[in-house]
Length: 437
Image (cartoon, rainbow, N blue to C red; front, side):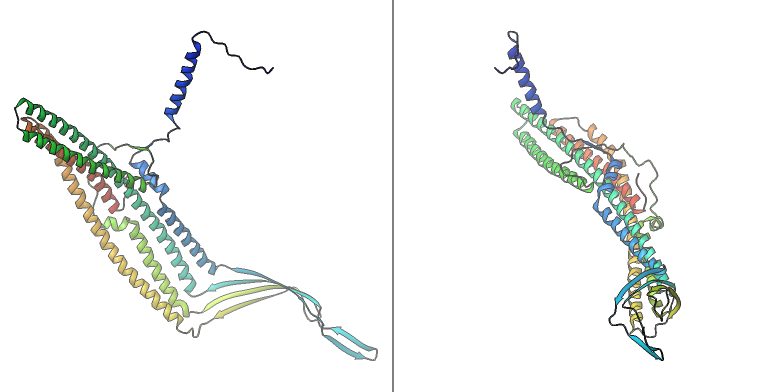
């Protein structure tokens, strides 16, 4: 007979044990799988995540690597080139030389059936009189331009992360005010019904309260949708999944007590990475033009070879040779002229683009400064608007409803002004080419 476990329980313990098991299973079922960690995000952490994950920065880094490769390719023209050539040959029949003498006829081979040859060659460009030298400088400037473009991408992504962070905070607080308005409207409707039943107000007050409640509900739907859109935009900027769980840590209130950053276009034209990149591109185009004009210049090179081969009656091994070569183009079918015309056209385009970019940056700084000034003025006045609206919240039922709407509007204006100021401050710092740490 198989032996098994025996569990002995005292009277009444079995129901207790089963109940314990059922409660444990029910608790585990309710808890479900482990929830993912909730991210706590402030402005700095949001910018950090955006810069770490954004694909445009990966593309910018790839362009830098491409530019570095082209720079090395250009530099290779001024470096020595060493090549190894080897061959093995079988020849049949081998020519012979017959020599007749009183002693008889003698035959001498003029070669070998199997021969080999090994050559190590060296080629070094001494000077191309500007062609290669300017080409190398142009590629180095292109690499610097690619690095500045990467910095421009970083500044743009950091700005987007800050803007979307404050936009989401604003949308959430506006939705909370919308919820408060519904609660106030429901309370006002109840008060109107009670007073109507008591005969102190007309039915018009109930209708008006119902309209206000419907309007508040419709407004909340709009605000909730705006919050969801702001949330999706924020997560997209941070390159996070749309179902990511996170909490926002609002920054401390930042009233405009600190000095407003300088809005001088001169500072922006010195700091903005796109301006720096455009300057490098202009210098690059000038070097490419100089290189193109050098296409008709001579080239001076040195060549050397060291040779091993099969030793025969007429050859020796090893041998070496050295050559100084000067190549002077006499006629290239107007190739140089065509390249010069292309380089001049590219330089002309870049000059026009640079002028347009400077004007655009100057205008952007002016607009950012005006936006910041407007936001600062709004921020100064909205606090008083809230206080005045709250003080007006005394009186009859109809006056109270109007006062609540005034308070709601004043709070909405306050939130808009507060976060618009934060965005405007980040915008002016971006416009003048400074970080917003």
